[in-house]
Length: 272
Image: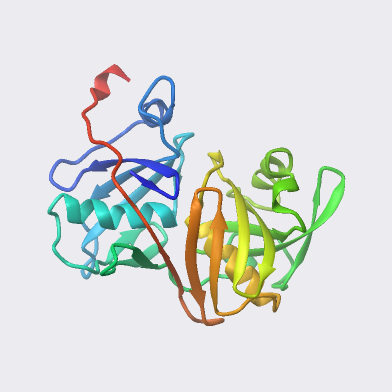
């Protein structure tokens, strides 16, 4: 499946439990030796009352992560296509908490991504206290970043030219910076206007992707916190556009965009 070019291998583990090793996950994600994807998604039975499904996300390096916005939209499409639910809105449990994807009449999917977290210890990020912007030493230079979590950690900086942003060179250094004990997604945002931004993201454990749903949401939150953006913003990513809405502190972030199935198949896991 794919959402704006951010692609996934999705397994139905609702009826048949599935345990994948890190080696198997890396091979599945390998674009030459396996199927090829940015992330592997497992759809499992719910673990808590009130949830319809439990959703696990594994990056291409085999590491499990807390949240994935584009994956959440694909999950909603997947469970409908597979006949696992007939509902337009579902409650999905993740490592980071509950999310609520909803399929609209136009086929686009809106996901309530929850309330952003800013407290450094909860992101987690090493800092003396909460600040709107932090200085970060990277590669001998000091950059300014906004830091927050949407179930997964993000460091967002504002750039003048998104195409010239040092994503491939600087992104890995931010991702593995010692002040982020669980690593971080490194976001780059160019403000086109109060309701329009362009974003690139170097994703933790993956590298730069064509789209990052939580990265788009984090950029809008960061821009709103800096007084640069309106409450509803079009986020242009390499793979296409997302709509992101955030009314302010204490409120959830709503993300709207497409998701589609590319192909289906079978794989012999014992060969991996």
